[in-house]
Length: 63
Image (tube, rainbow, N blue to C red; front, side):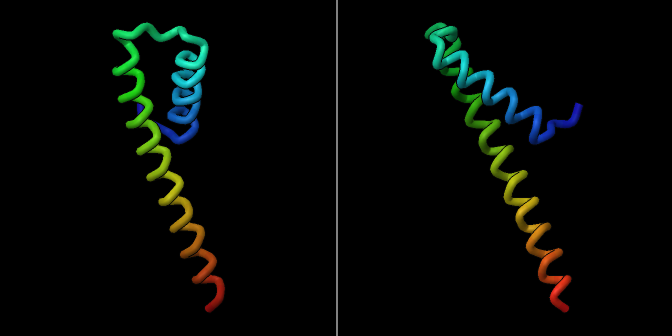
């Protein structure tokens, strides 16, 4: 299944909630933080791509 921004963000929220509630034991914490870091990187890239696409469309519309 292809990763989507919505799925990645939902998983990120879930990880953060588990950590905040203390539901992540010490052994799983490093893995959860690494996964969160990867999700943040993915979401950031998606947002940048969309921003670039929107800016390009706006620039194309000015011509």
